[in-house]
View 1 (cartoon, rainbow, N blue to C red):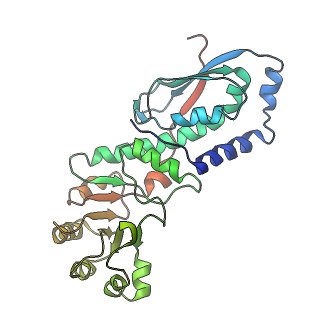
View 2 (cartoon, helix red, strand yellow; view 1 turned 60 degrees about the horizontal axis):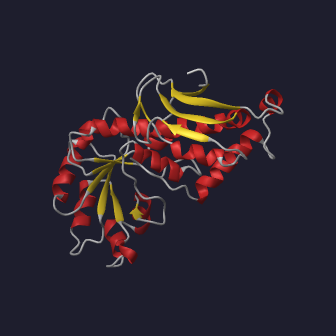
View 3 (spheres, rainbow, N blue to C red; view 1 turned 30 degrees about the vertical axis):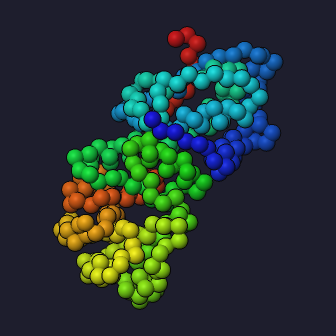
Amino acid sequence: MQHIKLNKNDSQLISLALREDLGEPYCDITANTLFAGEQQTGTVKVISKHPTDIICCGLPLVSAIMSHFDCDVNITPHCKDGDTVKKGDALFLLSGPQQYLSMAERTILNFMQHLSGIATLTHEFVKRVSHTDAKILDTRKTLPGFRHLDKYAVQCGGGVNHRMGLYDAIMIKDTHVDLLGGIKNTLDKLPNTILNQCPVILEIRSIDELRVALSEDKPKITRVLLDNMSLSELRECVALCKNKLPTEASGGVNVDSVSSIAETGVDFISIGMLTHSAGTVDLSMKAAQHD
């Protein structure tokens, strides 16, 4: 089971989403009109209407969203983040004042549809490589403000998080290499001991570049990223790196190609579309008082 501790950015994002939908101060004209003066409580359920199985993600956000309203609510989960949910199944029940259930509906659904979409797509990639030892990685290609949540969704789908940002790993890209005049000159810029044992990932575009990187007496890198290589090139690079450095394949990976890429023996496969092209799953909130 996956767990997430919402950080400051997550909380600010929830506040922004609610203000965007309800204005400031909060106002739902429809709910205020229909439920004016009433203190009745109700129960709603969020169900999957998606045509295929989905991976649930975002349940901890429900209580965080409802905490913005001055009311008592009760959340009854029917699954956990990371669980498979079939069409027609409920993810959770939510009980509380009818007015506030109505006000929170769209914000809850927006977050959960988005995050469950990422988790579901990630799970599909993970299944496609399950016969190998390759791990599926995400990237920094996330919606602004959503990175922490998006990467949590990748975990819920069975994927592994790459670096969170530019501050927690050194990744030497082709632009760095070209500006510095090649792989050797670039590696010469690195100290022998990286501060705080920070991971150092080097993007490699050709087998020749890899040979140069591996020729160092004391390798300063901890992983090589093999960018946009053919399957035969990947296999050759994996063989050269055996017992020396972990390998990561990247560039143009999709659900149809990922199995073949994994079968080359790479240790990791990073996939931008996990977070930038996952799409959403179909969830709906319905009254549940007559169930």
